[in-house]
Length: 362
Image (cartoon, rainbow, N blue to C red; front, side):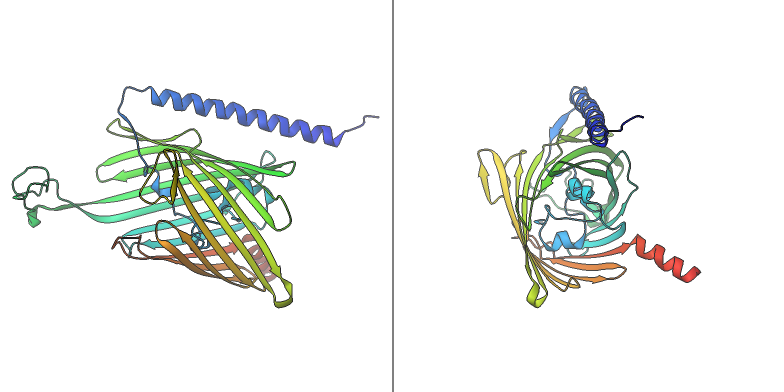
């Protein structure tokens, strides 16, 4: 008779999983160093992967991205992949954003994938587009190449227009290790800017856990190996890592059916300081965001957030048996006239659709 030690096999499986992940991480680091040494211009940029920033569910936008510790559903692959370790309902989510008075449009879809290699997975697809961008390069009367010349003028009839489109995909997975939830993702980017194109890749790592009842704390490193976008001109745009520490505390007022969640997040940008920073740590820019969510009987949610870019954000959410509907509003960025932004998201529980199909077919 052979005795099977479940704990031993369970530990062995996690060891093999972690070993396999380390092998892939070494390959990623090697590839990053290889691209860095390519004979092409390599520049550090802050906004090279902008398609991934602010592209998500309306709940997260309404809370000014302060809910990183408690983000749930398939969008967790984008914000905090370690939260995928908790499983939950298999969902299909879609979000549409009209940012800056409709100048920039986002369409985002996310879905939970099948469990594989003892990890819970999800996929996020993003399209960001801006159409009709005026190109005045060849429309200058004197051909000086710059409007800094006080005698230079733009010839309206010579203005041409081009489009900017970014397609992106994020695949994330999470698993449990002791009291910790651990996860990571890979992010792929295709950027079309007029007649030019660029392709990029990046990786995030995250870990989350609860330190006391009602608490959830998360640690995320975005662009952990530094991300890059390689353009057809040979230029390589490199994006420095961002370290995020996020915390959330849930307070239940059971007597009146209220759930109150307080959230805060600190972003440390290793690329350096920027005008939107709340403060700095040496040369590292630091930004604070906060949010509060008030839920009534797990059906209606009111949300508000604070961030250094737009100052505040607002939102509302409704839960139904089939899923949920969320809306978020954020004003024009501080000291700008870009216009306000609107975000709508629909979440559908796939298990509910399956049960509905079974009832209709019986």
